[in-house]
Image (cartoon, rainbow, N blue to C red; front, side, top):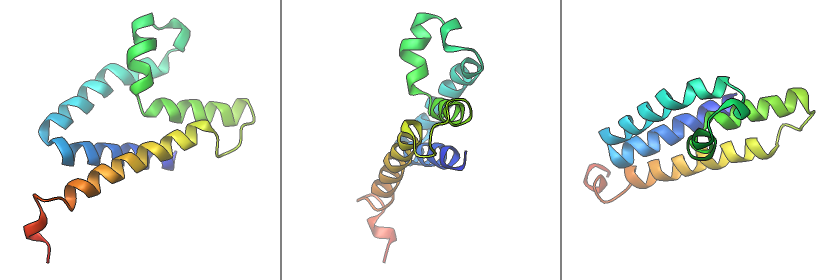
Length: 109
């Protein structure tokens, strides 16, 4: 769960630093429409949510990874954990490129 939290924070920080305030709106809409859907079984969701909303939710990997570890005896480094590590890496790269980019070059020594 710590990896999922870290990946979500890094993705959030990267998008916010890259886009500014519109990034907050993206995540508000994503969480508003997405989190209630994660409680339901994927088979009960409409086809549009299964195809277009559910694959974009970062916390989906947390739920599926924990489910695989608890019920299907998967290892800690399963497919969902690697997806979360990739999401965290992408957010970290976006954050560092924006932080150390041309706009902020004058503020560094």
